[in-house]
Image (cartoon, rainbow, N blue to C red):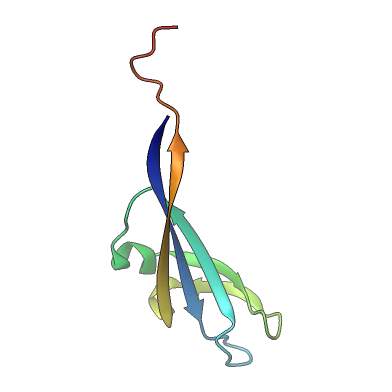
Length: 81
């Protein structure tokens, strides 16, 4: 087994209905992404304050944070079973 890394990007949006910053989207990746790659996507979101649901473009995110975690990967190359 060898360790790999996974990245979780959390985007925070302002709700178009109630105006609160309680709308979040999460995007997972096995590699580090440039900010433009995250902002180019459309995310399905739901406001935790008022329940509004809809699509939010990453370009309108008020904040993007990243969390990285180690993960285990199975080595399959070079095993002659």
